[in-house]
Amino acid sequence: MKNIIEVQSLRKEFKSYSSRSGLKGAFRDLFTRNYKVIPAVNDINFSVAQGEMVGYIGENGAGKSTTIKMLTGILTPTSGDIIVNGMNPHREREKFVQTIGVVFGQRSQLWWDIAVQESFRLLKKVYKVSDEHYDDHMNHVIKTLDIEPLLDKPVRKLSLGQRMRCELAAALIHNPPLLFLDEPTIGLDVLVKLKIREFLKEINEKYNTTILLTTHDLSDIEALCERVIMLDEGKVIYDGALKNLQEKWGEGKELRFQFLEKVDLAAVRNLTSGIPVKWELDEKDQVFIAFVDDNDEIISQVIAKVVAGFKIKDIKINETSTEEIIRNIYEKGAV
View 1 (cartoon, rainbow, N blue to C red):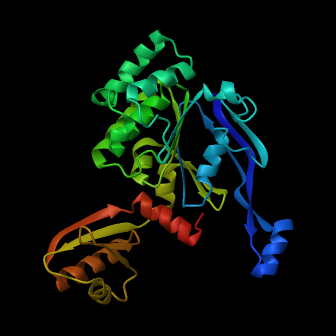
View 2: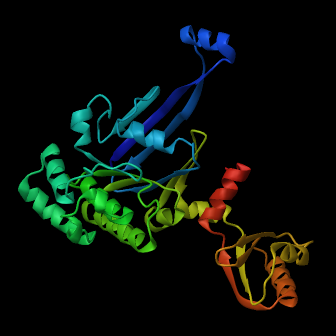
View 3: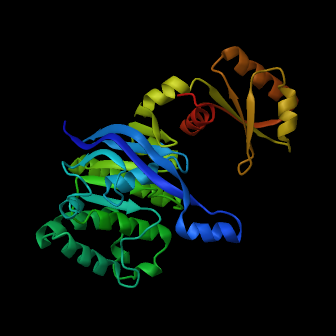
């Protein structure tokens, strides 16, 4: 299977300028500025094969958006090589943009004041899509994303969920082989997220569309991606199957308790002091979560203590969530 994305020794540095203090310093700043070089992306390597759906994850400032901007040709790398769809994104810009679709959760590619379908028609001309191809492909996209009732509305009248579905459709007008999604479900409700996920799975299966997805919502990654690339401070710290990540670092269990009476976190911690357990409280649902090693004896001890001390409404035992695993990796530098 051929690679759609190939990245070698990719690096992007930004200059951070600092101002000198006082009037004298400000005067000197007019002629010479002090700056330091900050690497946002620090010599990373990876490749993505055709048809893969890859989650590109990391904390804020890890370098995710900077990478996407270099892969889409918006930013020029400081050094390193990028080949996307067999082209250099910066040097062959005009030809290159015909082969990618991009959805940035925070930015719009639709015209604010005109009807959605007018935006679609303009993009159809920009991408030189024939009427036949447009009708064949876009009728399916519009129907699946359920945006037919929105086509006559100006973009500014749409809710965030409606707009994001239209943004996704706009990115696919030319049916590109590669789709970049940067936080596509940010701020969306659960039903819209599910619709978008189902749609992405469908185009991946139908057209073998390659998808690179950056998101803070790990349920998106779990629903769509078999592979994750994790970034920390501009470096790749994990690149592999999501399943392996869960098997390798998800050794613990989560015990989730709901109580019939009002209980505070300190009381639960006191009750289980001396047992190796870490407690957290999900305040919204009033669920007390105990993180323990996958050890039957420890699990039994925690449950016995809690059941003896409080009236229980509900108890569940779960594998450690992907979110918790990833948080532990970042906190401990476990990779």
